[in-house]
Image (cartoon, rainbow, N blue to C red):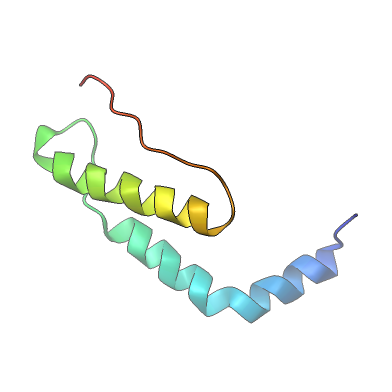
Length: 67
């Protein structure tokens, strides 16, 4: 199945407010990963991203890494 530009534009228009709200949420996380002071914000951000991916039908998990 091929999606046309018009179909993408229509979908965006129908969901624009939700997309903007999700973008605002993502940008609200204090997630400067090189600064240890932001560790908790990074953890919350990655959890939110995982939940978003799962809600879209992806299989996603958070893996702990050193550092």
